[in-house]
Length: 181
Image 1: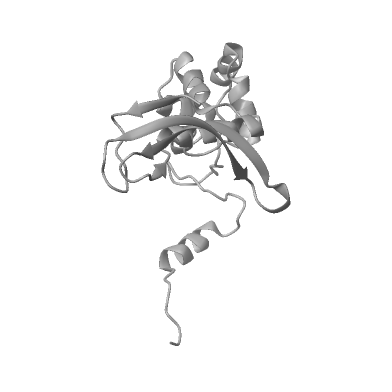
Image 2: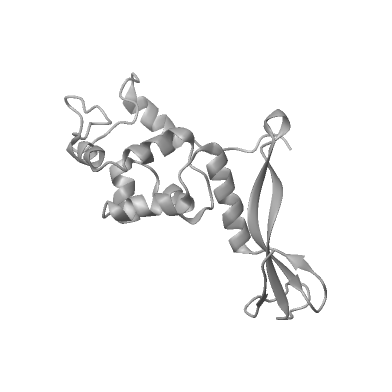
């Protein structure tokens, strides 16, 4: 077990900088109920020489997150970010290309969240430049139906509803009211 003096760490209990760091393999639960499993990650553990308090930091959290990604077969945060950057996209532009929310991409790249399996598959396919080219070549599809006689620029979210004007008036007049207390 490698042990080093960590002069930059501060003990959250007593504020001392007399902190030793050693690498330790730890088991931690992932999932719940019948699907719960024990995962393992080798993480830096800090020990304060002044008060004997033991703690981990963001590095340990990142390593645990990577263990979860590997268990689930998902791309690691740094791989998601590298994919986007290798393709030459800002997060906003990659979001437009893939239709994945910019906030979701940010969470995945920072290790603050996990992409689901389907979106991970999309990300994997985008590691091949020809698939990015296919997305770029794909024509945009209209998402709203514009009917004859509609005012210019009018888009309906639900074009299949009859009496759209009546529904719009009802929606505009809608108010929440408190009933008997």
